[in-house]
Image 1 (cartoon, each protein chain N blue to C red):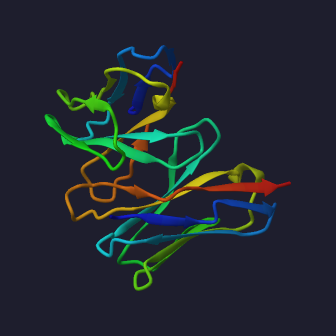
Image 2 (cartoon, rainbow over the protein chains, first blue to last red):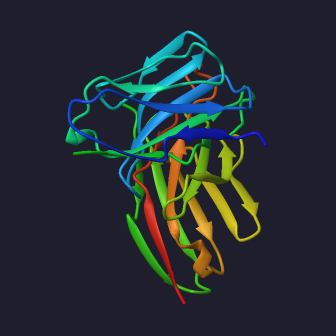
Length: 113
Length: 114
């Protein structure tokens, strides 16, 4: 079944650790996005990509980086995690058709201790 | 910069009553306005959307209206049911800009009281 997958679902790590949040979609979508969201609160765009080898920073200043080497894969990396990074991270993708909606993954809930 | 204001932040209604959530956008070039529903612990899911060439769109108990002049759009839910309880997000986008960025509102937590 075509979908967008995020791993891990939950992650608890210590301050200073490097982590990568994985996001993959099987729909062949060219546009992919990362949002940061505290539970039930506002969605903040932190990175997006139009396609392979294209990445852009979003509206929320973030200490994370992304890469887009393959169409289906859009990982998010935090080089040195801090307690302020504790949040939920939602990955989304969108197809080429103008009216096609954003599809969201189930999210990764990150806790930095 | 571009932004979308959403009101109210919380809304409680009795089961069977109507609920209305309002959004105002700043970028006059926005031409696509989706609404997402996010249940507790789940991902946001599209429930209805509208383009700028249409003033109103309806899907069963859900409708969206758009006033381009005032840069307002609203979500209307009629005959509310407990399963409508969730956080609702509006968004605005310019499909012609090439950026395909969605600017989301701050969310409305809807509680339907049985």
